[in-house]
Length: 291
Image (tube, rainbow, N blue to C red; front, top):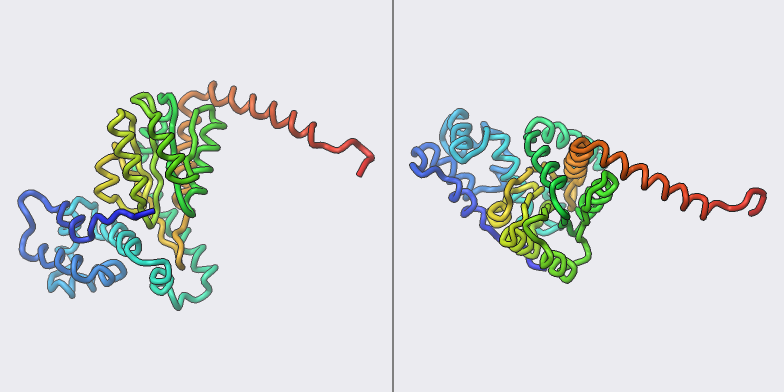
């Protein structure tokens, strides 16, 4: 499955304001383009020194590119830089971490705090309302982050809504996408690597009138162009694979909001599921006193 390549430099230059950048901000942009690794991991002070400007100019440059400040820009820069590397190269970037298990827990805690500070609650409500109003919702999730899509779809169905995750490959994705209409919603979930099939499905869903949302760690222009809204999630891990923690937390937040849209509907769905669980439990329970 091919991965999309929007181009690091192209992505940055597409964000330039119509009036362009002042010379000092242009120097910052030049460092971002020519030294993506140092920009991705360095401090604001280090970047300012590399560009020959002050820290305030770095902040203003980030804002001119459409970000709240340098931390928000660096988050996406690093996600894009890591996505351009192979799994061994990503592991090498994190080599030398003391106590990887502890470092992983700390990174996830930091990512959750970052998500909580930066996520727009209205976006969560918007996605929940769209799913509640839809005939059907399709969730695309592949690779290690398929787990996020499966949990999302499972809990949304339990809340009483027709939500299904597509994780079995391109054939299932093509067949499912071909059935989408303007009454449907598609949610594309992608961390670290963005697959071409995900972009094609999102574009096709949009052309069919479906509402499209993306949950990702880097807003690639190709996916963002098809999506109505993009929900950015920090997903950097401490080794060769991305962290799923913040992504899982976000989809759980969407389902929690979804359950509040129509509490009666969700209540009926849970009661029906509970009744079926009870029947299954009775069928599988062994008779008393027998092995």
